[in-house]
Image (cartoon, rainbow, N blue to C red; front, side):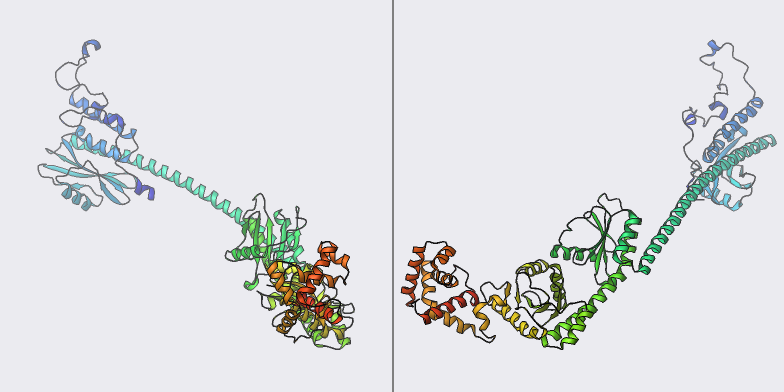
Length: 615
């Protein structure tokens, strides 16, 4: 065993022995160390007077058996094998004219020499002992006429060797005493060996019991884990088989974990929530932060904590379709919670794929119908197809054209436009062209709602929207599409190119064809208003704006003065200055018409803002 290898048979002997005095003639006999032998020599003991008459000194014949008895008792007082061998080597002289030349202990099949072995003849003695292979035998040591290697044997094994030499050949009695000392030493080693192995067996038994307890705990955990996994898989399989959809999955997930469960689309909009504390209203997502979060989640495997939520992506085949999350404000989630969240995402993926496929099919049908309406199609067929896709073409419709400067009109941008239109309540058919997206919607769009929603979705306001006049019949739609394009073009070439423009609010510009050259318009405006524009630029006045407002108010002095927030007399003065500067007579019908057209083109087509002269 490893514990046997680690056993050191030669640890330091007991403190009681290290403190005993030694004489100059070598180690004292065992009995003397314990205080049982009388002092040697003829001198009296210092305390003899106090103790009374000294008893007769024992003879050598009396002293040897008594000394061996004390030695035997000392051998069995220790359970350390190295200590036992050292005691035997120290007290070998009690048995006769012997000296301990060397000692060995058997450790894991090898004979380990004692640190007390002599160094002079160590190699020869060591070689001889190993040659004996467990048997007793003679040992030759120069200067010693007699030498023996005596095995220290137990009932079942060899414990070691004691190599003894003598200055003279021992008598039979001395051989008997030596054999007795060897047997006692071997017996003490057997006891120590048995005790050590008993202790090692007890430790091994304790280790095995602890290992068994740990294995039982692991088995219980694995069984519980498998049971939990089976229950989770069974619930998720039932949800998938029943076609329960997103709400069923969040309901099961909430039941398993006790935490609020939710599903968001990839843009951060809530699709399903089960559990308490649902925000009302649900916060609008920030497109930039949402993209950053999806990117960070995509780089990690499994659920990730994002503030007070545990979030995992639903992305079959690498495509992100949505987000499944648990609200864990107190950070109570354990490994079972994480596994349930992963299983929920795996069950949700087929549902979102199915919904995505349905949306793609529906989008394709919508796009084909919108393309046919813009090109002109049979009414009966159009009505039937619109009913199939759930859109009512019998209502009044408008054509809306959307263009964003930093976005190409691809499928992704078309989805963004469709999502924004749905968010502001527009029911529409959607298609796209190389540079813009077209909506055929069943109600007049709000002047700013669609633009603001798209600006939030795209993260930029650099977009333009053109809206046609209302369509009273399906045959009007191709013509209304041209009107929406004209409204978009007018807005794009104005000083404020971003925003929404309605065709029916263009006024005079509606009669201008789509092929008009803006340089010609600028020439016309400069011919009739150039002097006023230059005057305003030099003197920081507002003569052109005053004239434009005068025409917008139908020539009414009071309304014009009120709209400009000036006095009536100030207005009269400005109009007189306009006559003088421009050289045109406002009372002349032809001049008046040309000036009014020029101010409209200046204000709408060329994009001059009210009160701001063209530089």
